[in-house]
Length: 280
Image (cartoon, rainbow, N blue to C red; front, side, top):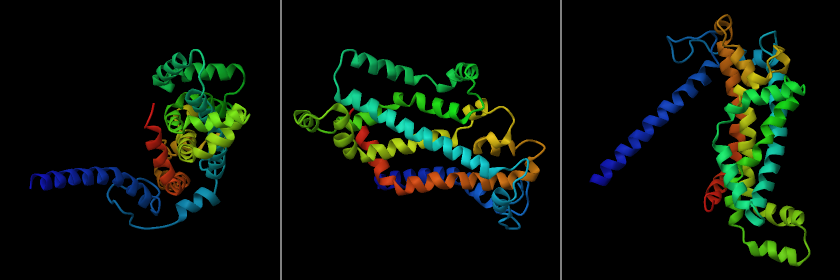
């Protein structure tokens, strides 16, 4: 009886948390179909329904809404950052997991401690460094910064590679394989789950980032913005009553690619997390 009561309470709490979490998302979704452009707090569901907000995003660009360009900018930054970051994380993880060299443990400890500091603390310094070399208001500069520190996030990937038998690497060395050959031909084919986990995480960071993008892309040229900056601009006092429903539509669209990616690769993503947690 006690177990049944505890189970009911537990599920009730989980249901309550799920509802609290889903209500804002549901409201954003239904508001994106609203015929009223501003914020309507008197009704949860729109009184009139329309697809005009989505049409305005893609078919009727103006000085405020340039969603096609923002989406392309964000996609380019996210793809290149993802590719570079994934390669760096995998290479650092392999080095820390399979190679033995002087100072390895000290370097690992230092990188873990360094990774504990919030990245926001270094943003001002990074901004002035990039400004000195002319890479502010540049998508290239953003890609460099998003990718540069990716290797510090090697820990979970290293834990996964620790589960791959060292005898495979030793056998390949006996056959005359180089470290690069072992990495690409032996370790990488066995690391599909953690690669998926790394790719999704590396893609998510630039895809949804606002703070660093806002700091970097500050020229006021709307065509250079990412989606996060463009959507935020719609919430200004003078525009929110004209563009809030369009803002909601933009929020729905930006969530679709990563949601599809996660659903398709969910199994490998979970395997990567659990595999990487076996060893540190």
